[in-house]
Image (cartoon, rainbow, N blue to C red; front, side, top):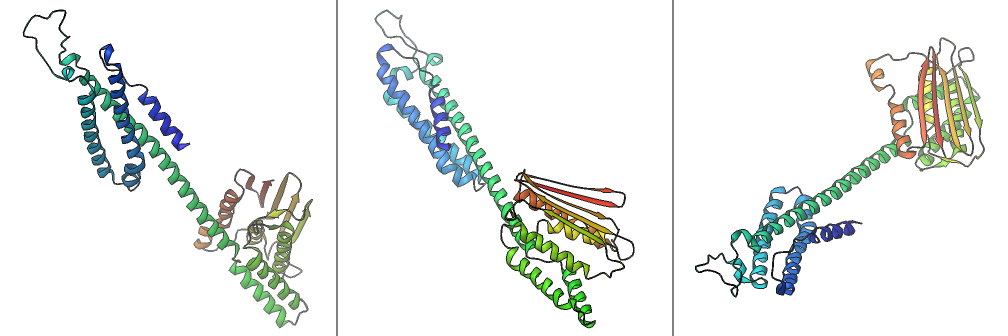
Length: 352
């Protein structure tokens, strides 16, 4: 594609060569003159796009680039005059004044205003500058597009690294609470202690070994969410436990999904939606069919921001989720949240 565009630029511009004024018998010489002049321009064009631009423009050495172009212009003009000297009628380049009356048998004598070299020079310089401008402009567009793609790749790689890092992390508050709950159960010599340790072990295994994968079966993600809910319930007693309902409707249990992508919404609901004092609830729904996956979380809303630091970092997990969705499912998802009185609703849809 790149070579084709450069070829078309050269062909179109060189086809516009203005035939210089000449006598009919000089047609062959005329053709040689045009051919050598065009070769001169093509060589400059190729030199510009293959050497000067990569060496100077890409390295942002603009001063050296313009100096090199100027030197090439002088050199090309030198070649141009050599070509005209040897392939054109030397008499046509000499400015003469008749010292005697002209007669029919004498050749026509031309003055400066009708000198073919005068027009040839302007035509040559014009085409030289036009080839320079178009060739350089096209290469700059390619460089800009290359730089844009490179920046996009760097941003994508950075986002992937951040995503992989986030996927291998478990909320330290959750881990601390889980260990405290297990410790409390152990002190009470509760029969649930062993189950709690197994739950935490299974969740850590999922985070360490499964979350590093690009995709996992949705059944594994569901199991992780259910274990998370069970672990969170250990913080409450029967009197103050929130009402938690998780409904699942799957058509394909092997449907592959990004690990922990749904977990952010569940964790956010527990963080802001449950209370030890007032009745609270979390309703989670997951539906998967041949067309799309729908995930919704509706929870009671309680204000828990106790410090300016908490307010500052509120919504950071949701922002990370949106960045991940844009990276993983560009143009194939919808995500929105809304608050209605004491309810907070979150809806995520992923198209297949």
